[in-house]
Length: 280
Image (cartoon, rainbow, N blue to C red):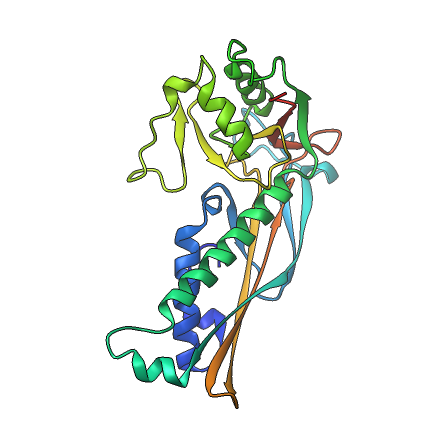
C-alpha cells in the first residue's frame, strides 16, 4: 500500500481490482506517517537488503585511488512481510436501491481508514524498536518547563542526520499545546501539511500525533536517513458470491515496517530518538 500503487501488484478479477485500488488509494491518502518512511518494494515477501553503514566511506580520494570493501561497510536489513486484511461487502438489495450512488463507497472509506491505522501503527512500533533514548529534563505538563530543550537534545543526538519530525500521543500533545514555550507554535496548515498538526520553528520538526507511541513519550526522527523503512508487497483480493444474497471482497495487503536501518555501535537507531516521561 505504501508508495506507488499499481494494478499489476493486485491479484484478482478486474472488478475486484478496481475495488481494491479504491481502498488502497484512499488508505495511502489517509495515512499520516507513511510520508516519513522509506518505501522498499518486496514483491516476494522476503528480502535481505545491504545498507552501507554510516562509518563506511572514503574522503578526499586521489585520482585512481583504490578502496577496499571492509566487512563493517554494510549491514543487512531483513524483510519478512505479513498481511493485513480488510473486507467490504454489498448486498443485492443495496445495489438495486443505489441508483444515485455507489453502495461500496462508505465501506471503502472505512476499510481504507483501518489499513491506514494499521500501517501507522507498524511504523510507530518499528521506530520504538531500539531507538536512542533518554528521560526528559523536565515534565512538559509543568508549563514553565521548556519542551524545546528535550527536542533539541534529541535532534543533536540524531546527527549527522537532520531531524525533521516528531510523533507524540494525544496526552502529550495536549500538554505541548498548553505549555508556555510551545503554545505559540500551534497554528497548523492542513492545506499544506497532510497529517501534520504544526511545525516547530527553529528545529523545523513536523508534529504528528499517534496514540501507539508509548505513553508520556515523544519520538524524534530523521526521515531521510532513513529512520524507518516500509516493505511494500503484493495485494491479493478475493470475491465471494454469498448465498445470502450479496458479494464480499476480501483484501490482503502484504507489508512490514522495519527499524532500525542505521545502527550505532550499540545497535541503537541512529535516526530515531525517544524522550520518555515528558508529562507527569
